[in-house]
Structures are given as structure tokens and as C-alpha cells.
Amino acid sequence: MTKYDYIFKKYVVEAYQKSEGGFTTLTRRFGSPAESTIEKWVETVELAWLQRSKSKERQTNLFFSIQARCHTLLLDEQ
Image (cartoon, rainbow, N blue to C red; front, side):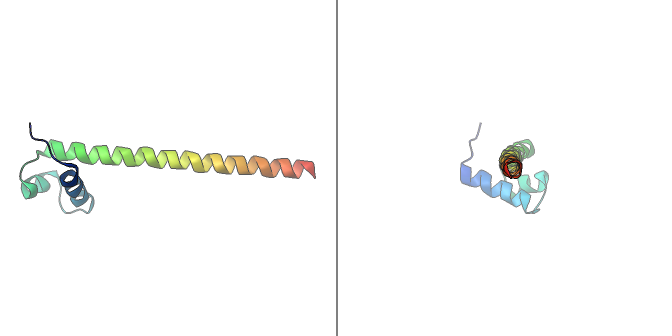
């Protein structure tokens, strides 16, 4: 089983994300990795991005929720 370093994986995934080809095209272009291997790399990156996005969205929602509650408290005091 061949191991690929981070830089190579990043380069291949970025090529996919830039629409430089599908899994088959990139497999031929880069030679070694199987289509399923490239697909797993892309899925891993996209899943990590989605989880980060959801986390940031939750943080933003929490911030606005706290801000709205503070605003309500201030209005109630007046």
C-alpha cells in the first residue's frame, strides 16, 4: 500500500476543487492514486470544511442569540 504525503494529497484535491478534472482524469494525470483514493481525499476535505462551517454557524447563532437577550434585558430595564 502506497502512502502519499500531505502536499501531494493537497495538490490533487485542489486540482479537483478547481475543476481541473474528475476522479478518472486526475487518476490519469497524477498516475498512482486510484479513483476511489482521490474520492476519499476529496470527501475528507469537504467533510472537514462542512464541520468547520457548521461550528462557525453555531458560534454566530450563539453570538446573535446572546446579543438579542442582552438587548431584551436592556429594554426591560427601561
